[in-house]
Length: 372
Ligand code: PEP
Ligand code: MN
Image (cartoon, rainbow, N blue to C red; front, side, top):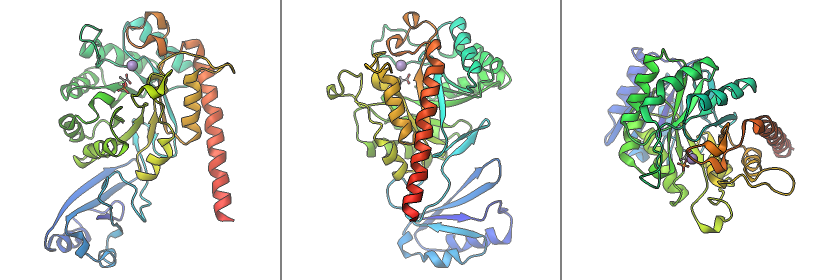
């Protein structure tokens, strides 16, 4: 059960003390307070665990200072979308809104290689009005002899270049909890020129100790990729691990499932689940067309398969696109064969805008149909 308090309630106010006293005096109930500090207001929620079936929802709703009470189902207590649960989706980070009704594109390098390539990428993004990117520094590779990413050595120059080109958020995969400290240190040393969205990749979706430690910090939001060989429920529970430790700023990423049924694509594209995950949870949903499709193959109509699946995800309401680009794909150290070129950036963005417009029209249509 979640008790949502009136916004901006003071924890020293008599109302707050009375509510806590009321809840703490119940048998077999423990309370946990969560504060969400937003740009407009601070929201306080009290999570009740234990024998909540014995509690009367209306009695708690009658207490001064209580806005609403939500009875949560067992699954995804914090991130889930429960019955009568109209709590807002999403969060703000470094001036960017991430929610189930926004769309942000993160085009960039799968792996950071040279300062020249990173700068060319960021310059192109700025020229096309983009303020987010992807930049892999820590790369989880199948083969131990493959390039493993520059790691912490590249962070400061990547962040400085991001500041130079007005990039506000970089999606960056981490594979170990120490990487969070390395990222924080490099940001501090460079004067925080940008922000970082910590990415947990498909190979670590169920690395519970990593999830717990990343969940214990709330400074950086997290993009959790769906596990490529586990059920959707298992991946959503993995996301809940992050939230259960305190970090509610979680984006859920679809990136295709590993099966040869997906051939000729690298993975079987699962963007039909965009709507399903939005229905089950309040997380913004990211799609990764590059790691899903894995090639630059083009359909007879002139659009790349990567563009087609992107449009499919966006027209279904996706909130974030994580997509590989590279100024010289032949020279990319990781995943060059699936990277789009800088020349293709405006083509890609315009195509996304068409799909987004169509999605918004579909939502308006649904609203009209349901109200008639
Ligand atoms: C990536 O985005 O660079 C990546 C490795 O993705 P995934 O974890 O989905 O394979
Ligand atoms: Mn990759």
